[in-house]
Image (cartoon, rainbow, N blue to C red):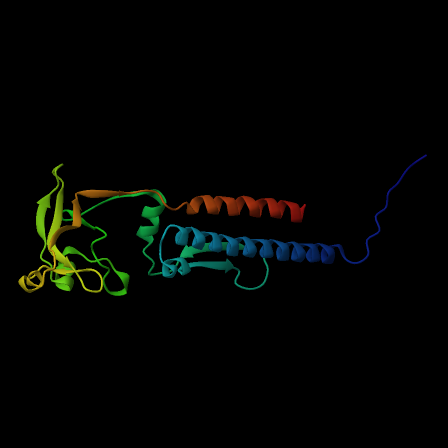
Length: 213
């Protein structure tokens, strides 16, 4: 007594394998593209959540390989567009100690300093040029250096120089702290792009395993 098994295959085996490869290539490419787009969105959300501008967030781009068609070797790349301050992203990712390259103090503006054009922060020099208030070096009771200036409240908002004319008008002058001087500042870690990348890779691997099994 004997038992035999015979396979019945309709069509060419090579054609069947070719169709299978094409189907798998399409599946792989779709998953890679979907996860690449998701990672780009996650990076942008992280950047915006760290307080950076929408311009920097929108500078996070993605590229698919191949750009069209399908491939078993499909890949995706998420990156910061050319012109984006990548060193800033790196500092937010890792944290950094910032100091003056010339060995001077860093001037940290207080809430008394108005915003400059387009919302930019004023430096001590541009502050004097913009407001007319002359800054003087002083020290706190603890000995920390600060930049102060005599000012009066503006009629609308902000402050103005404490000129003789304004004082004659009965407007009270106050000595305000405009800048705090420090040797260096520590920037804490505010981004975790690597965590998003690792999560995307894990999700993609799990999805590929499920779809191709």
